Image 1 (spheres, rainbow, N blue to C red):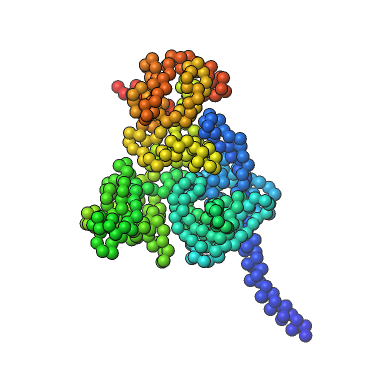
Image 2 (cartoon, rainbow, N blue to C red):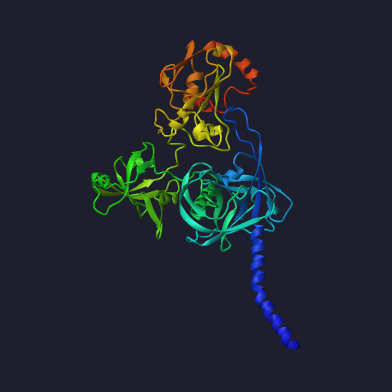
Length: 505
């Protein structure tokens, strides 16, 4: 009888061992999920010499190889003080950003005290699951301090606009809630990281739709981080449109059964300019056939934008393309380069850097960018000046790379008559058309005429007395408590060039 009881106990112990092992494995995994505390002080683009009030933010992350923490870039953007905390611990450790990719909304953190990793293990990166497979999202959403685990089904994989920096990259969609605080937390399948939770869908009628950064984007960023120099995702440098119209296909000289994307613009300073021309039809990118709707089949019966193929490459790589020109099929390789800061006249949103500004005669001048436009709040689409919003749809060019704005006037004697002027886009300085903000500042600083005359495209003008502007400058800065009349480093490039000229024999 005793022998039988012992045998039953042994059988029960054997049956319980897998469950105990799984439980220990899961507890070890949870130990590698990190809560992140960030104090962020973003610049005030309405008053570019100062910062907005600091905000306390929280997010999530996961321990990966080489004692690093993987999280979202927006969790630590503009962060002045960062702390991290392990699951089940009360102690917080100081951390800093080692590498950040705002376009991919990913960041790598390094903890100053290496003992932080003593009881954690790095999580490996896995492959993206198939559609309808279940995944788990780990993180620390607001409303509590303990680790939260939600489960959802992978429902869609395609290119999406990333909310943080407005980039257009592959993203996975799941039907699990991703709430504030969840950002940066790992999406887990089979004990491996298959994504990083980044944003949710707030569209009317959408319920529990979350998006995550997929493994292909994560791997690209990790490879980019190997030398510590951020290069980002290379650009092709060509703008295309779909060719679903039969008439358009015939006009382009495509044969029956041929499909592709029509090239409508090629930027002169881009890699594509050496290969493609306006009117070409892009047929294949890296062996992926481009359909009339500009998609490629990246996995069986799954399609996404053809940029997927280029996104797998790095700056300096050569990307094979096939295209048709006047009916003739051609093949070439495009040597990919770093992306341009912006192809629009309105520069894209930047993080972790101070705004550029220049004050002359009490007038505050700044470059037009998305940071300034978004200063109008969540409803900037309707509240920002219409001229600003219109400029977002205009391409930059060599003679006009970015727009300069007279943001506001600090009332003083030198600027009488203009005290109510604001959000005014400058076209020229004393007859010189302005190409970008640095050139504008140089024109203003180097002026030797009695007056400075500023004009917009419609011919309206602002005239300032140069001598009065210089004389009243100290009082204006003192009156409005402004520490410097321009942003740090604004004239460093000009000074460097002048020094080189003086050194030339």
